[in-house]
Length: 312
Ligand SMILES: Nc1ncnc2c1ncn2[C@@H]1O[C@H](COP(=O)(O)OP(=O)(O)OP(=O)(O)O)[C@@H](O)[C@H]1O
Ligand SMILES: [Mg+2]
Figure 1 (cartoon, rainbow, N blue to C red):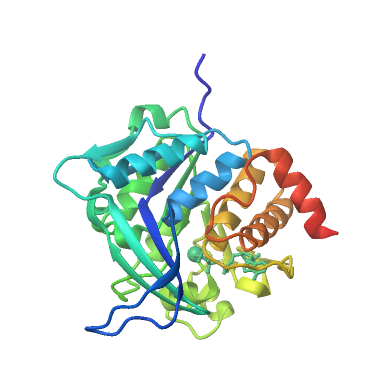
Figure 2 (cartoon, protein in one colour):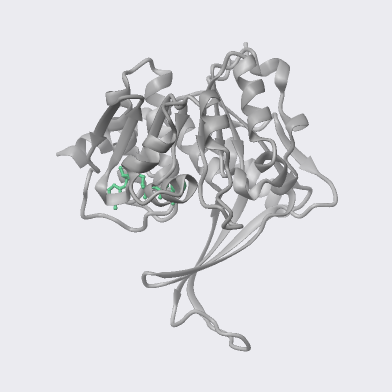
């Protein structure tokens, strides 16, 4: 019998083309050689799904790719990481989303073509099946125009299906930061902005001011702060969690996505918010020990073993 999915992850879906060891970032009219190249599953939602599947959670993905080689690569990668792709749409006449990442030391330049992923719309979701899936996570709606414009409609319907919902807003590529949080957050059980995104979304100088401006309409706001860890706010309460610092950092790509995966895997296991914060801190830290965001651990056993080593 087919296993029931624990979580439906939806959102951006693209391939990362990673050019490393550049002598300098190319200027107009210039050609620069890269010393190293890698192709990997990219996108906030894709990386989150791969990480939470690696923790043993049954995950289905909702997203869109084109009918091309990159699309096939993404589907193969998701399957290899045990993410169910039955709800991934292959759309004709669109190119699969891709990001060229140029890395030179600590400097990085990205170029994204959103392509097929940007066509994700509310009709792409398996609404009947969603009544039988407990959790729903959406990542990076800012690169999905039809989601961005109808976030409330989407989360209303997910709540009508009885789901526990979460949202990782990521960066607003249009720099508008016009998400209606007061309307939306009553339907979002866990909201996962990083500190900078939260300040821009709430137009506030401090996190405290931003939280106050939401007038307690929210359920859980989890603000991630890189090496400074994370803070969980529930109306009237605040809980801090330190980062698990380590000396094996390769890059911080996808740390936030891995954090969401660790946090939500713990909630799916029925653990407390405090334990979920700890779990997120460990998966976030582990993801910094490898290049890219997915692949620091490939099973629950490997996660537990690496977590023990990391915590010393
Ligand atoms: N250098 C680091 N060392 C240890 N833990 C880290 C480090 N960077 C991030 N983390 C962990 O990962 C969590 C999420 O990181 P961060 O706040 O950078 O997310 P983000 O900005 O959303 O990242 P992204 O969207 O690029 O994945 C942090 O709360 C922390 O627990
Ligand atoms: Mg993030």
